[in-house]
Amino acid sequence: MSGYGRSLKELEGALGEAVNLSLLENQVPRLAPQDGAPLPMSSLHRAVGSASHGQRKRALEIGAKIYAERPSEFTRQLKRLWKAW
Image (cartoon, rainbow, N blue to C red; front, top):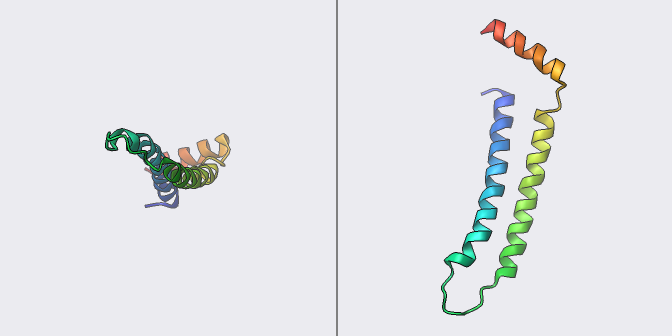
C-alpha cells in the first residue's frame, strides 16, 4: 500500500474511533439498568471527551497532510498515474 493509501486508512481509523466514542457515550445511559441508581456519567464524559478530542485532532492533522496538495498538482499527478495505468 502506498503512503497515500496508508494515510487514508489512518484517517479512516481516526474518524471511525471518534464516531465509536460518540456512540458509546450516547448508548451507555440507554443500556444502563433502570433501577434508579445514578450512573457515574461524569467520568465517562471526561474519558470519552478526552479520547474523542485526541482522535479528532489526529484526523485533522492527517487530513491536512492528505489534502495539502494544490488542485493543479493533484490533477497533474492524477493524469500521470492514469497514463501509467
